[in-house]
Image (cartoon, rainbow, N blue to C red; front, side, top):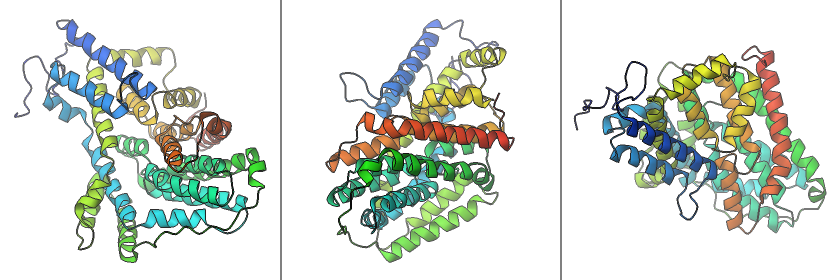
Length: 437
């Protein structure tokens, strides 16, 4: 296919619109796009399709295929709908994280945390600090995946209730990732769309992230104080140390990448160059590094771009934005954005909610982008379904024999989220980045 628009499609490869942005001559296509869009985001809210083993990624892929197969979009339209710089940046960061995984760094440091000497309260503080800071520089989901089984097994063997430590781990991964523009997928997307500077994002969001880490510790410490009063038995995880050379190689790559991020170089290109450099190795096969990439997440992003792009082509998104503007419901004020993103994030999840909002709200101001990153990330601590990191911790802990239930997480997640969002709103308002009302 040469990529040129075909009859019935515009230059973006989407169904051709009239001057009002509607489809008066092809009502069937319009209705199809609406149905696919609605069912996709309903699936995002449920997390699965009843009766089928179809998760969010599979559902999004199915939706994109339906739009392609019915001619609602063509392959050229798919290429133009997908935000490739965001996917390339996310891919590059996943390769970097895979370098640390293959080097054995994640397992080693998780074992060191689980076996840290001292009372349980000290161990809780170490979990919060280490998980939070690592999540600011590396993918928070990767930290959750690597740490959860080791923390679960380690605390259990020390005679402790693993639940407070696992809740702290999940919440810290979310709070820590809020500090940087590369901490989690939604921040990466927001940073790319808003062309947000790495250091300015850090100065705007890191203070809230650090405060939120403190909130995580205080809330878990208070609510689980009875469990944390039990003395801990000594425990040493029998895990091999990390490969010094490969770990150092990953650390150097991370430093180089951060240095490139503070320049005017495109972040996606910088991440791709660093990822390509890591593939040059005599000891680690490139397929092992590439195998550590979360292809499912990249596919979810791509398919949601296609679905929301098709919906935006109908003109209904613009009409909805006009209606929201007329009723002063545009999320350009914290009083609107905070409840909106908290509700969406804990139903359709934070990544789909950010994609949805950005497909409707074009070119938000920088202050609103910072607020969107903070609120969408911190609200993920509310419920166990609020973020992928929470789900990963619960599922990986279950493999290790520890059950982290919905009520267990909500017991701490709700106050952590309310306090963190209050801190974020106060900071954003006091610094003049976004008004409260």
